[in-house]
Length: 210
Image (cartoon, rainbow, N blue to C red; front, side):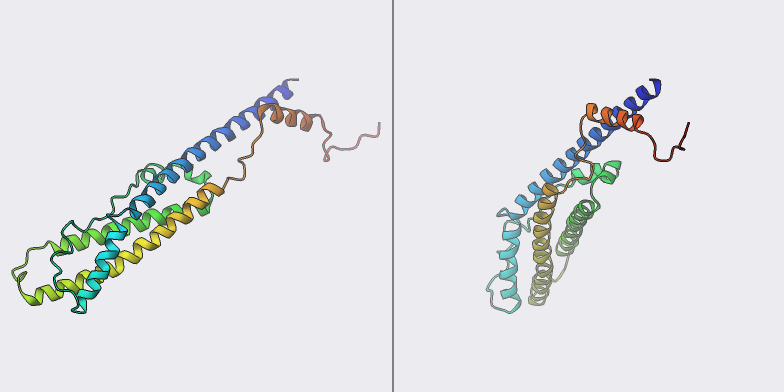
């Protein structure tokens, strides 16, 4: 009877731990889903990817000498996308990621890596474009900076468009994927299984003919 009680207690503890894992993973999924959805909407909003696409088109013309005045292009700024990464910073160093499917972890990791790469590209561009220059008013500088901005935007816009696709793929996978142990049943069933296992004769038990 004592052994049965121990087995039942172990079964209940196992169920509780499984439920706790499910809860932690569900919370992580919600955090990533909410943050990625917010970043997806932000990138699509008028001040970011659409703005960068317009700049890219105008500077492509300017690089060919087809635009009259590039000074007005950045009147409202470059608008680097201020996406959030708090869910990744909070969870990336925790054991919770071990309970997420490896595919999900890789997808999410790639997304935040891509965001960081774009942030660094923007920072480098802004530092370069704002550095003091004595030749800013010369035609040669105007031509050089137009080519530089055109190259920068040629890299930035495709990177943001790839990130947009990554967001959409991640949101689908986060909604669909479940850990293999997510269908854990209740303690009564776990207890019942433990009792049946204890009462069933072992296949390895020696046969007693007496």
